[in-house]
Every structure is written in structure tokens, then in C-alpha cells.
Image (tube, rainbow, N blue to C red; front, side):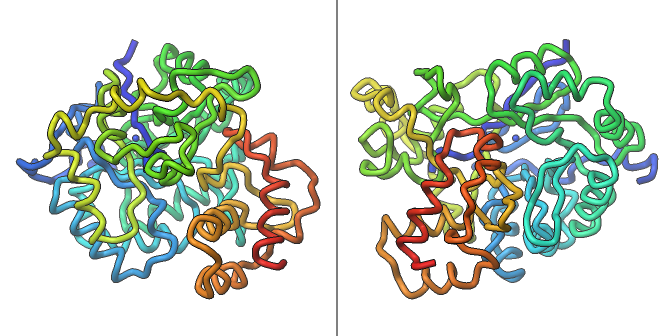
Length: 379
């Protein structure tokens, strides 16, 4: 069986021509970064990587500053699941002529329907989405091609022998992807996939609030965004530091890189502080020994992942939830109201059809969230 590695994505705030097969990222290891080998891929990756979540509201100039600063400080692994053309174009511009220095993890099965992101196994849509990814990143290969979100065992079984899986394998044979990975939020499914030998990399969510306890209703629920850093928002009812969260994630034997959503170059150093933190600053056991998340296990918290999409009413659910969380935490400001008003559809248009509920990996009561957003924002 292949050696499988895990990419912990950052809920802690808390993975052509024939000549392409021979291409390797052209970067020099930064002495201030810790590097680990990404399993059987042979790729050397900085333990702190860059997610795509911070690129949706910044412009191309800020994107270039962010990617440049990240690369200069040893962050050489990036996840890009978002099909939003703006996000992809921002990252492509941000990389500039440094594409060869960044190990890119791109997802196969992300489709932009003109208004929002969708997850799909339709091969034609997957082809359009993947070619769009290559074009916007100004590249002809992706280092790790991810089978996008498999959270149910029956779904994994359906993928076996499917045209979708064949397409992914064809991309690897053509050199358009170098390695095959997969993202999941379900521990049982992820383990089965790891044992299958079909993938080399798995992106999986880790969170100290919920990893040690389970609920029959929602065994893999976790809070997203910066909730763990806020005692009032955290299921633990205590505030952890970023250093403690990173230490928790990186202590797992299979984890090679933690992926973080960062929206500006000025914030990169906040995340990189982990690399020079003292053992005392990294100590999460003393904090976790005081509390558990058992009382809040069933509440569910939106991580703004967009897995619930598409919405039958066209509501950008993740963005509504993000703005709602900010408004409830910081108060409703004119800026937040303006951002909400600019959305193509609003929470008040929710029909409570429930289609989103079956797609949410985290048990979020989305219709109730929409009701709250309508009350807060007025529509």
C-alpha cells in the first residue's frame, strides 16, 4: 500500500506534454521553515501551507503581495478547491513567474455554474473546470490532483470504476497532474480510501474541540474560522492560540502540512510564529485537559466551505454565514451591511427546501442560519 499523508486544512483559526512529468518545484528550502516529505510523492513541503479562502475579497495586487511573501518565507504548498474565477485568477496573478516554486493542490470536480461553486462528478463539467484552473493559473500541470470531497462510503463505492475516476487517472497518465489525492471530512471513509492504495495524499479536517469525542448524530462536526481563538465562540469555552492549534495538528504522525486561509501578506507572520514558538507556547494539552466539547457537539458550525452549494434560491450560503458571524461578533457595521446588500441573493429568499442540509458535512442548521441573517441584515 502506498504511504498516505494527511493535509490538515485550517479550521484551526483555527493538503501537457510528456516533459511535464519531469518538472519539479524549483524552490530553495528556507532555513526558517520546517519541511516534511509528502509521503511517496517525494515532495518537500513546508509545514504551514496556503489555502485559497483568503483570495475571494482581495484584489490582484494584494494577491501578488500575499503569494510572494508566503513563498519568500518558505510556504511552498497551496490548496485550491474554489472554482470562483476571481479566486483562481487572483492566485494565478499572485504566482506570476514563480509557478515552479509552488506545489499546487487542485481539485477535480469543482464547477462554477456562473453564480456559485458546485461539486460535480460529471466528466464534461470536470474537464471544463480543470482546464479553467490550468488557464487561470497560467500553467499546464497541477502537482496534486484532488478527488473532490468524498464523505460517504456509498459515494466512494460509486466512484470506483466510474468515468470520473478514469478521467482523474487519465490526467495523471497525461502528466497534467503528478499525484492523485482526495479530500474528506469522514474518518471512516478516509481510512477506507487510504487503504485502497488509489491516492497518495488525503486532505482531512482536524480540530482539537471535536477530534476526541463523537456524536451519533454528527461524528465529525467541527467549528471553523477563528472560533477556537475566541473563548465565547469556541466549543471548548476557552481560547486557544494559533501556536497551540498548529502544535495539535502537527503532532499527528501522518500530517505533513496545515493549510491556512490568509488574506494579506501582513498576516503571514502571525501564522509563521508557530515555527519559533517555545514549547510552553505550543503546549495544548494543559488547555485541552480542562475542557471538552461534549456539550456543544451537536450544534454544528459553518466553516464557509461551500459544500452545501448549489442553493436552489441562488443564495451564497457560506458568504451569508460568514457575514452573519462577523456581525454577531463585531456588531453590524455599515461595511458589513454593504457587503451583504451586494450579494446576488439574500437569506430572506431561503425556501427552507433543505437540499443544503444533506450536503453539509458539519451538521449546520442552514435554514435557521438564514432566518437569523434575515433578521440581522433586514432581508
